[in-house]
Amino acid sequence: MDPERQAYWWWFDSHNTPKYSPWLRSTLAELDEKTKGMLKLIEEDADSFAQRAEMYYKKRPELISMVEDFYRAYRSLAERYDQHRMDPINRVKSPLRHSMPEFKAEFGLTSINSFGSFTEEAYGSSEESAESEVDDPEEDHDVVVVEDDDEIENQFMAATSCDELIKLREELEQLQQENEVHRNLIKQKEEAEKLKTEMESLMLENMNLMEQTKKKDEEKTEMGRKLGEVKSELTKMGEEIKQREKEAEKLKNEMESLMLENMNLMKQMKKKDEEKTEMGRKLEEVKSELNKMGEEMKAQNTYIQDILAGKDEEKREVIRQLSFGMEMLRQENQLLKKSIMKSAPKKHSSSEFRIFKRVGLGNLFGLSPKCPTSVVPL
Image 1 (cartoon, rainbow, N blue to C red):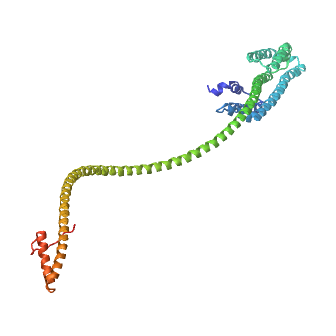
Image 2: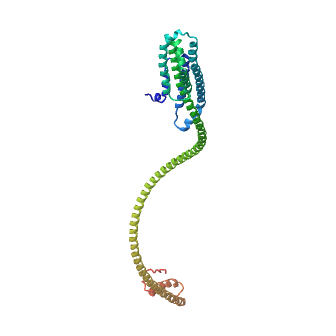
Image 3: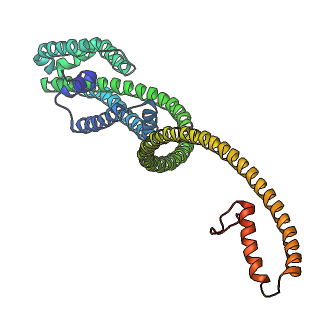
């Protein structure tokens, strides 16, 4: 069975009654449309409680309008039902009051049997139906009909035809069906009232939720503003990070070049250290040689100084001898000059003096007269 049909069996089962009057068909068709619209409106669902509350709040005027239409239709059906409940009795009683006695024997047995079966079927089925406020008028009608059963049977014996009985039976069946519809309408009205109460509570909850939603929207707006600021800061930080990465890459390249340069410098320094070590070794050798040479030169210097000291002594001795010889020569020269001046003529004085000087000096210093004399300066 279809789930929708199973849920609303009371509505679908009411469509199975045949032979409606044109007015009842139009009324029931209108009720079916309204019932279908209300069920569709009630069955609409949403993802959250707040959305459902908002949906009911928006649909509230439409629900109120439908409840009003149901009330008007129910009132119209109740009034029509009351008219139909009274009309068959009037139609039955009025002809029977003016009927002739000769018809009683002709139609008596058939009328009683058919009406008896009619009353058993019609009113027996009404007792099996659910109890409601709409059933009360029909039950009253049943009591009236049962109380007047003898009178009706006597009247039908005279003037009622089978067609009228069948028509009356059909009308009663229609009234039963209308009674069922009225019960359903009452249930729908109760459900509508219940929905109205629920909708009012939902409206209050919806208002609270709307206030909370408004606060949440304000918080969301504030959060969005803060999020925008954070995004802006993150963007700036991202740009700074990119700039730092570029600088880091640049520094990395510089470091690599510096490391290569450092390695080259270290190699050069190592080479220089080796050269320095070699030069230090050679310098030590040179220093050792210089020390040796210095010692030798010191020894030679001491020897030379000793020699020079001896030479100085010899020179001083020679000078003393020369000084002494010069003094003697001056004295002799003076003596010779005096003697020559006295004994020899003047023309031979200069040549004789030169010869005497050369012979005297040579004898004085132990030199040969032929060798030229030289004086070494001190």
